[in-house]
Length: 109
Image (cartoon, rainbow, N blue to C red):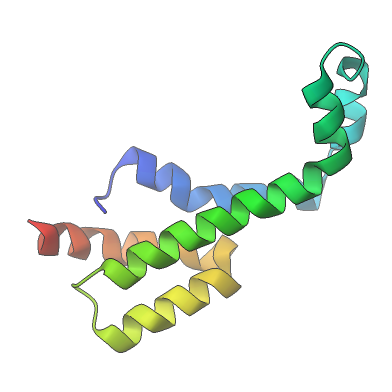
């Protein structure tokens, strides 16, 4: 993984989602006026927490696999990074991205 804007957005997404959930503007109240016109809005109002958990879980798996494939990191640390990313995704993914994106780019080249 290279230190680029798309990877940066992906790395900071869980932290942004955590801030969104903590400050909870009430997604139900935001989407209620649209539920009659758009069936997908009705689905999102009903299952927004499940959709959010699935998206963050997929994100954690994506970064855990990237850490396991990074040959620039010793094997024990790769496993430690993967486990820590799955357990502490909002904080560990940006740290991993910042510390190891340049080293994985150098190893890939």
